[in-house]
Every structure is written in structure tokens, then in C-alpha cells.
Length: 278
DNA sequence: AACTGGGGCAACCGCGAAACC
DNA sequence: CGGTTTCGCGGTTGCCCCAGT
Image 1 (cartoon, rainbow, N blue to C red):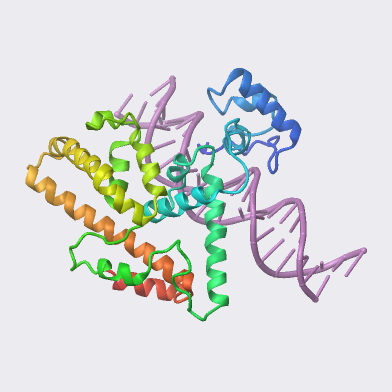
Image 2 (cartoon, rainbow, N blue to C red; image 1 turned 90 degrees about the vertical axis):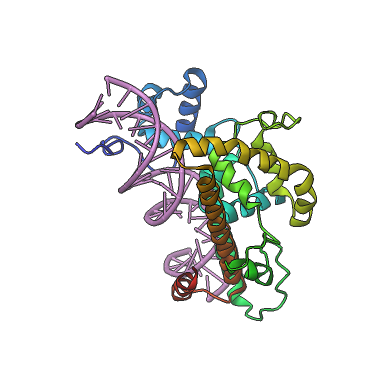
């Protein structure tokens, strides 16, 4: 049989959950927990597939879920993280306690739609700097051009931070990095993503730059060992990777900004733009 | 009152990864 | 190991509501 067959039994119910079903699931999970989702429906007395139960619990019933509109801070966090990592909803959600990937994904999709609609309805192209969500292309342009090697003047999220976030995982403590604070790295990154760009640059020198340097030093021997190359080669590769990521990030941010302004819209334009991008 | 089109959102589907045996 | 099952993610669908007609 096909191995994705959890939902093809006759009796399995689908669609929206009734309050009674919710009650059964909550009752079961709170007393027994969930070991194996595929066993949950039977044990809880539900005509659902395990996958559906899991989804319902994760996205709606679990006790630590957070409801209601996104706060401005959360919104900013989402925008910044999305600018840095793209559609990695689960990752973005992991930085927003109580929010689910689904919720963030839905929010983002309707948010984009709204932005684009709004932009195409007023084609005046005035008040370009009104929208603080996006970095202006005037600032991003020189940085878009890979021939300029100068550090970014303005970013949505410090790019090296983003890179390392995935390399080391969130559980490493700042203490392990030689910082006195006991804060976890992901908390520091959380703070970093909330800062506006001006504040970031103020903070950067005192707090984040040392952190990043420590991370680099910490990662280097591991990288060298893992890939069996020289330290110089490793540094070279790392620089290239950072450069590529910076370019990617600024491009997507720029593209989004242009799109929101209504300057570009259709698929043709985007593919043309992409093609012209090194 | 009936229709309809769009928005918001919950849920589904397929796939790749991870876990299990 | 290899085969099978389960999990988790991200794209997508489809349902419900509501405003406009």
C-alpha cells in the first residue's frame, strides 16, 4: 500500500472540528499526552486521522497558544525574519512564542496581497519612504551590486547573525561564547530582530559584534575539521557564502519593496529581474 | 431575498526527513 | 542495513462570513 494512507479510511471524518471533537482531543492529550499521533484518534475516540489530530492540537488546542492580532513587535519580527530567511514559517514561528507557522504564513500571505493591492491602486509612486517596512532601493542599490565590497549600510537583520543562527542552533548559551550574560543566543537574536536599524548600529559595536566574532572563532575549527580543508580555504568559502547570502537577502528585500510600491508586478518582470541578477 | 466575489482562516495534501523495526 | 511508518513542513485548497448588488 501507499505509505501516505493515513486519511483514506472510509470512516475518517474531515473538515472543521466540532467542539465535541475538540473536547475529546484535549481530554485525551492532557491526561495521556501524545506518544504516537497515529494512535491518538482511536484512543481518544475520534473518527479522524492522526495527522488531523496533530494539526488541530498544534495550531489550535494546545494550551500555550497565543491568539488575537499580531502586535507591532511581532509584525516587525515576522517581516525582519522573513526578509532574512524567506518562507521558512516554522523557523519564524519558533521566534514568536505561542504563534504557529500556519498563522504566520496566513498572515504573511494576506499581508503581501494587501500591500500589492494597495500599491497598484495608488500608482502615484509618491511617499516612497512612508512605509517603514522596507529599506529604500537607493540604499540597497550599491549593496546589490556585488562589485562594492563595503559592508551593508542598512539591512533588515544582520546577515551574519542569520547565517549563524542556523549553523549553531538556538540552544547555545552566550556564556559558552565567552559573554558574561546568561542569555541564550536566540534571545539575543530575538532582540536584534526587534531593533530598528539605527539602534542596531548603536548596539552592534558593544554587544553583537563580539558575539559574532566569538561565533566565527568557535565555528572555524569545526568547519575545517568537517570539510578537511585548510583554514584559509575555509575562511574564503565562508566569505563567499556570506556575500552570496547578503546579495540574496538584499535582492529579495529590494524586490519586495518595488513590488509593494507597484513598480513591478507580473511574473515577467520578476523573472527579468532575476535573470539580470548575478 | 438571493447571488456573488473576495478576504480570512482552518484544514488538507504531498513530499522529504526522521524514526522505527 | 533496507523497508516501512510517522512526523513536520510548506504550498494549497476550500469553507464560512460578509459587504455590495
